[in-house]
Image 1 (spheres, rainbow, N blue to C red):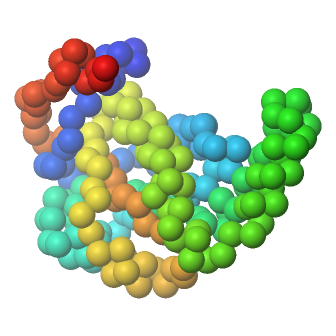
Image 2: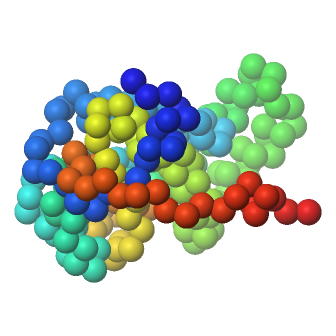
Length: 202
């Protein structure tokens, strides 16, 4: 099994996959890795749709500006946030933090009151911030996949309305990313990365 450092160094964006199916136990392990990710106030707003059938994968490919490799991956994770669960989870989570003494009672009340007053418009404006919680969970999947010899690729270029229409999802579900997963049929070379000195600011 890879160390965390090895997994980070080995990870590549894979766009060519073998047709071999991904075992169900591997998919379960990937979802479990996502489930264990941290989130603000422990709201855990992430939701995942696991797509295996070819017809739906083709629809996802078309909704992603015809990126053909999405349909070629044996599994596609649709990575979403549930806006209602974020509200409910934030209130519950901040109250739990108050009970264990991690935050002051006054702060618990301020955050809980503010969260309960969010309007749908304000929630949609908050979506990018909420999506940061999901991003951590998705990266857990990306790195854990390497333990099983699986590759993946973050996809952000897609028509969200078209994807939601496929499944009949309402306004509470927001699609943040697609993650095709499978056994790699390519071995991309490392891409250039900035040096440590280049990512530090004064």
